[in-house]
Structure formats: structure tokens, C-alpha cells
Image (cartoon, rainbow, N blue to C red):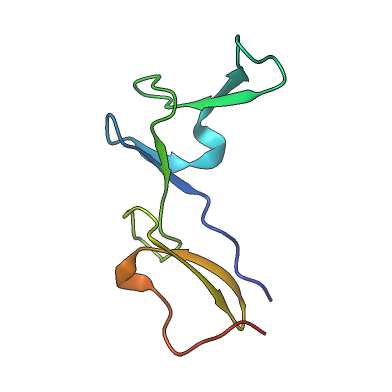
Length: 86
């Protein structure tokens, strides 16, 4: 079974953290074919970071690692070691 990519997000501006589905989504008024995402708390755009897929961890992703069970997005603290992709 493949592990899911991290669905957790954090706002760099105000510190809000939650799931990707909780973010605001809208049409970019300057490029109508683009979707923009915003923080549901402070409404900032372009300030959302992807968070480590480690259980209970809310640190920003710093590593992308292929493992035997799938691709992991982790902080440096939770980076898989000794594994290589299939």
C-alpha cells in the first residue's frame, strides 16, 4: 500500500494549521484559468506551506524521499533512512 502524500498545511503568516481541504479556494482575478489558495484564518495568499507527513508533526516539509512503500514528504527529523524506492 502506498502512503499518502501529506495533506497537512500551515500558514506562514499567522500560524494556522489544518488540512488542505480546509483552505480557501478561488479563481485568480488576473489569470482566470488559475486557482489560488488562501489561509482560512488570515486570508493570506501564497503563504501556505506543506507539512511533514509524520504523525502529529506540524513542521514544514524539507525532504522528499522515495521509499519502498511510496513517496514521503517529511521534515528533516522524520526523513526516512536506509530505504530506496522500488
